Structure formats: structure tokens, C-alpha cells
Length: 358
Image (cartoon, rainbow, N blue to C red; front, side, top):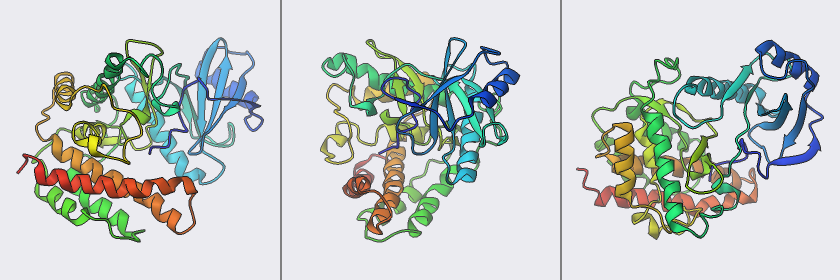
């Protein structure tokens, strides 16, 4: 469901074509000015296959492997702003224990290579979106359980970062974050709504009436799930990097936890469309919550609110693609989101009826 095309993994990502559209000489001069290793040595670059949200290149220089991200040739202005926010976030994560690709440098000066860009480390790891669970996690269910604990561990580590001390004051608008959510996403939906979505109004009403009184602001990824993390090769499970930070902000980090649990057992076992991985062997919801609470230091007693909000939000995000497809403006591949939207919203409404939150 997430667009995983901007992964920083080297494995199975490299296209053999030379990166003819990248001015490596100009890039090398800029890298020299930034003090990036390999001063004076030639820069080697080649395209990384599959990028649609951004253009991706593998950069080799001075024995170092890096990845360069820049906006595509269309919609550069909007994408450039998002790209620089990602770079700011990665810079702020330096020195923390949050797994991430180290930022090497960034610039919005289009005179360097023709567009803004940033350089980060190339992560040597694997993603579940590359074909499911990699060995040994494809057959070893006990080892697979560790992937889930590592996933929630990454969210918990994000939640405990002192974001102001890391220079992210002004990165988001935490004041009134939860107050804005329902109206923001209903307004977004109104711009393209073309069909009835059962459970929508019911879920929106419940969310308005059960919003937590307070929350502690923190770094929020905004699309935190298996699709947007990478793992080290081999067992035991170890999170290598959280990736694809386009939706990151300063908000309520517990929404990332809700995002993780969108289709979690046992309730999620009844979902037929929203899952994109085999959840056999996964730890219990209670174990996930306990680990998050222990590492983050946050109260998880209102977690059902965040799961319901995550399902509500994700359903609307995906419905935008479904609406474009209905108008003939999107690839046929997004048609699969149609039943996922309906399932997510129905399960959000169902949980609002059964949760102990009153």
C-alpha cells in the first residue's frame, strides 16, 4: 500500500544502465566542498531501479557507497520541498538510536546538478516489500516474531527523541494535532469522493467523541509499517533503517503505533484485503504494546483510538488513488485498493463498537 520505490537498499535495486542524466563532475565538486570522503576522486553513479516518487542513484566514491535522491523531472517544486524536509529530519536523527540512513549532505541549490538533492548512506539490508519475508524469516516463525518486535522498537525509539533538542522546533504543528485529524481527512476526501464508504460517518463521530485529552508531541513517521523499514540480513532480526520519511512531522507518535497495529492479530486475522504479508508467528498485540511502552515510556492505554484513527486515515489516503483510477487517471494496479478502503473503514467502525474506550 505504501510506495516503496524510494528504498535505500542496494540489494536488487541497481539498474545496469549508467546514470547519464546525473552530472557526476559537478556532484563531485559539491561533495568536495561538503567534506564528503574521496576528495578529488571520480564519482561513479548508476540508477537505482523503480523510483517513481523521486529519482534515485547509487553513488560510489572513495570506497563509500551512498544514495542520492532528487525530485523527478515533473512537479519539482512540490517534491523539492518534501525532499528538503526529509533531509532535515535525517540530519536531526544524527546521534540518536533511531535506525536511519545517515545523511551525508543536502542542498536546494539547483545550480549544482539541476535540482535539489540529498546524499545518504546506502543501506545494505532487505525489505519485506521486496518479495515477502527473507530467509530465514520465511520459514522460522520464532525468528519472524523478532521482526515485529524490531518494528515496534523503531517506533518507540522515535517517540522518545527530544525533538526540540535535535533542532526540529517548527518542523511540524503539534498544537491541536489530534483536534485537526478528523476534519482534515474528511476535507481531503471531499475533494475526490465518488462513492459511499460504509462506516465513515460512524467512525468520524466516534473519533471526535473519544479523542485523548492530552498527548506528548514527538517525531511521527506518518506511514510507519513493514513497508517502510529495512532489516539487516540474517537472524536474529535487527532493524537497519526506517525509510521513506515523506509524511514525517511533529505530532502524536502513538499514531505510528496505531499504524503498526492496523491489521494485527487477532482482530486483523479477519481482514482479507488489507494485509500484504503473512502474519503467522507474530507476537501478540499485548507483547507489542508492552515493548513499545517499555522502550518509549508512553502510556498505551488509549491505543484503540490510534488504531481506529490509523484505519480511518489510511482508508481515505488510499481512496484518493481509487478515485483517480475511477476517472481513468491512475494505473490499473491501484484498483486493488478499492476493497482495501472499504475493509479498513468497516474494521475501524467495528473496533469503535467493541473497544473498552468509552
